[in-house]
Image (cartoon, rainbow, N blue to C red):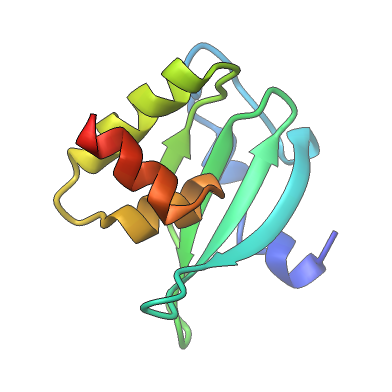
Amino acid sequence: MDKGLLSIFSETDFRKPIGDTVYSLADIVSLGYVMNKSTGERYARAVLGDGTALIKTVPSGNVKPELEYVIPAYKSTSRRNEIIRELAEDPDLTQEMIACMMDISQSTVSNVMRR
């Protein structure tokens, strides 16, 4: 794993239970950056063993990133769509941001929102 990227997440991100589970850094199975193509904003995305994803905005400069979103694990399209709708309730999130955080296309988010 990228040590610079790993430094964005810390044990304090896992101290409070997420759902009913307490995680640790050892539970990270995938770690990467995703970028909002229209704004250039970058997110650090840590996917845990059960599919839960932790999202942090990667700020420029010396600002420490804070845990912003927890996307619960999902195994079905209907559950994915519920999560998209829940995230869309946040007025600060655009369809592109939701797509970027969930690692899906913006058109998928748009299609879910239209239905």
